[in-house]
Length: 219
Image 1: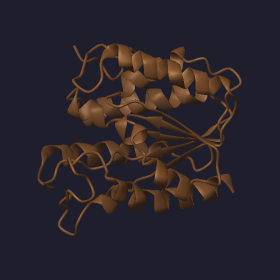
Image 2: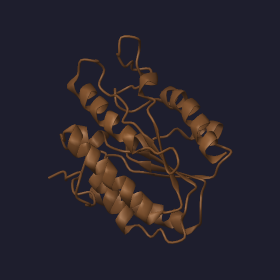
Image 3: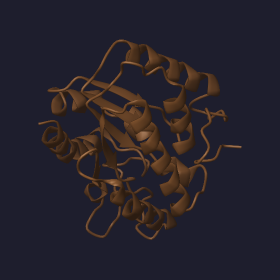
Image 4: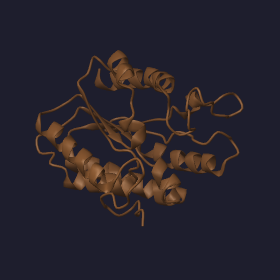
């Protein structure tokens, strides 16, 4: 069983590209980083976070110290478990850049209402474990090449709801998914080679509005 997005659980399934033990090794490496002290930015989420291009990070976010706590394949239940079990005492990023939910669609086959509840639980866990941090919640990015693919409506449905979580004080919301689409809604391999994960060029396109928002929030 791949899990449930509403129940906190560690990785339970071996993927070809990441075994369960690999997942725990990455989780433990994050704990080493959190013990080293605060950062300005904590990138938190799944593979879309883990895969941030380092050259792009240094180009657009170099004004800030940062840590990347993304783990590929994570759904909201996995991230909930990490937040509940990570040693975060004294670790208080100024801003958590959160991106989660796409694997609730692709791996768990959950409906928008369930995914929204899972993301809401993650937000609550972030606020409990890092109470002084602000949160920039990112909308789920569109995936699959064709705009007619059923996943596109699920993404839209989730994003319409999670946008309402923002109060522009503690929690901010940003949806940059449109940047990955052509005029007719198609995704090109140049921007997302597998129609899910951005290329370096895709990350650069995303980094521009994201960095402006981060600078505005953190002043």
